Image 1 (cartoon, rainbow, N blue to C red):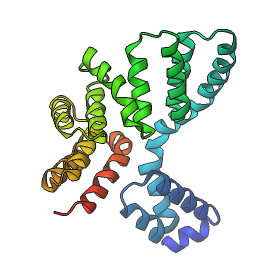
Image 2 (cartoon, helix red, strand yellow; image 1 turned 45 degrees about the vertical axis):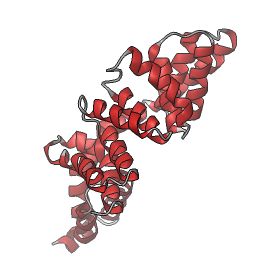
Image 3 (cartoon, one colour; image 1 turned 90 degrees about the vertical axis):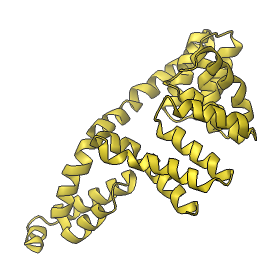
Image 4 (cartoon, helix red, strand yellow; image 1 turned 60 degrees about the horizontal axis):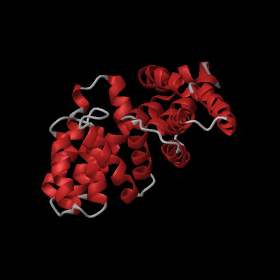
Length: 246
């Protein structure tokens, strides 16, 4: 039956399998899907594409927003030459950050703050960029100011990032207190995993595994679209559980 299906739809069946495998590599869903695609051939690929790739159309739509975003970036890069205002630099930083250009975003926020920006989110995002660039000491002042002025900023993500910055700069007491404050008020997988990594670095393996497991425990009750968005965190949680001894 499967062989007949593959023969009738050759080479389209092969194309379906290639599309399914490429999507699998990029999105990394549950491993059993790969066996379905490989062993059931085009029929399995078709099932996979309907079950996994089709719901990703929303994410594809978000990717397509990159084109108008990059056009806006080019416009702002030109406009700033004549009008280096704080608003232009802040918007440019936000667009760079959305586009994954962390270093350029950090530079734009620097320019906005140098031009006397007082927007709290500008300082917060500059700290976030510094942290992602591996410069936790530079991130600390911005994140400390953000949490001091607005403890719940970005749905308590700012507090979680500040805790991570404390951990990265060798301040375990402050990190512990801030992590506890953040996880009491939010359920961000990012915060849970940063806390788990901090605990593992402190040799508190059982607690580290507990917090990594909490990320995976969220998966069964999540809607499918959220599961797809959380996949990178699920993979990081699984990797941490493998790395940290029981």
